[in-house]
View 1 (spheres, each protein chain N blue to C red):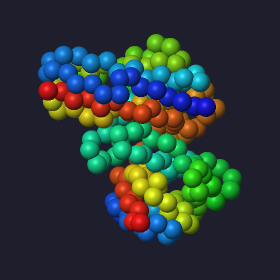
View 2: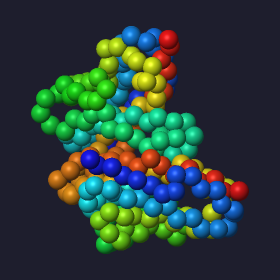
View 3: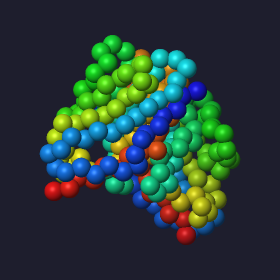
Amino acid sequence: GAVVSQHPSRVICKSGTSVKIECRSLDFQATTMFWYRQFPKQSLMLMATSNEGSKATYEQGVEKDKFLINHASLTLSTLTVTSAHPEDSSFYICSARALPSTDTQYFGPGTRLTVL
Amino acid sequence: AQSVTQLGSHVSVSEGALVLLRCNYSSSVPPYLFWYVQYPNQGLQLLLKYTTGATLVKGINGFEAEFKKSETSFHLTKPSAHMSDAAEYFCAVSDLLVYKLSFGAGTTVTVRA
C-alpha cells in the first residue's frame, strides 16, 4: 500500500516551454501533497505544500508564478514549470500524506527535468 | 523550527560489517523523526520512523534506530551490511502541524565486497 506515482519519469524540453508533472496517490487519498526539488548530490528542498481544493503554500524563495501547483482531487496534484529555463533542470519529487491521522509522507519516484 | 544534521556525507563499509549513520536533530517540540533511503534516480523509501513510545525503532531491511532525547540523536544502524544497502540515506524531522519534513544533507553508503 501507500504507492505514489509520478509522470513523466523523464522529460526534456526547450527553453521557454512549459512542462507539467503529475503526482498521483494510487491506493490512498492524499489530503496533502508536497513538491520537492533535488539538485545532484544534494538533499531535498521543499518547494511547496498543497492541500486538496485550496491554494498551495510556497516556501520562501520559490516563485509561485513559475511553479504552478494544482491539487484538484484527493489523488492528483500537478506541478507546471512555466517558461522553463536551463536553471530549472533538476529532479522533482512529490510526496503525499494520507488523511490527517497519518504522520508519514510517501514519495513518488521523481521526475528528471532537463531544459535545453 | 526543526533541523537535522547528518554527520558524515559518505560512509564506506565492508560487506557484513556494521552500518552506523549518525543523525542529530534540533526541535522545539517533541519531534517526529524519519530515515529514508534513496537509490539512484529514484524517489525516497521510508526505512523507519519514530513518533512516540518505544525509543528503539525497527524498520525494513534489517535497519533500526534509537531515539535518544538526552543526546538529541536518532542514529541508524544495521548489524551486517549487504551490497544492496549501497544508497543515499536521509534523516528527517517533521513538524506536527502540516507535517513538513526537514531533511539532513544525506549520507552516501558504499559497501565493499
